[in-house]
Length: 217
Figure 1: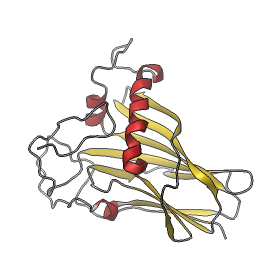
Figure 2: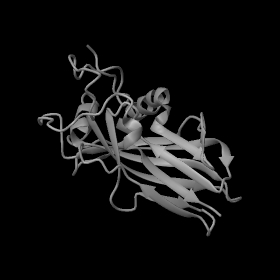
Figure 3: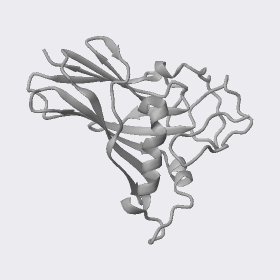
């Protein structure tokens, strides 16, 4: 039985033909850095993502991608894959959710712009960059942005260094982050290792949300 289609490659891939949806745990790990982009009038115009995939998934995703130099990929060579990435993310709401003054804003974002993929030949990992503009510029005292996969197939985590930045924000705005504290799913686990800790259920991904909170009094 197909467990799930990974949304970051062309088409659906049968990674775990016999996987049980009731026994969900992460199979892709993403380390992210985030930027909130402000307009001159102090409103928030969008969210700029930079998502670095784990080495196993990066190797899998780049299989078959033409390259001029062995072990390296240029942005141009990765451009078709980047396009598939952002187009596929739409059905998952880009794994990005916004709350304005405590109220959940559905369909807060329009389609991504300025998207591309980078490849780090030393770490052998892919990083997806894309900007999600707000449908309407946001002016709120409090803004929360959450990034997570509701089905917890993908485990998102903030980068250790400079995970979130406010770009051109008013001086009085402050930002804080909240990371999931559950230790059951360390990023060191990979698909070739025995999974011996407790597993999350489908729909539990919100419990592992990474939260960005901005306060502009």
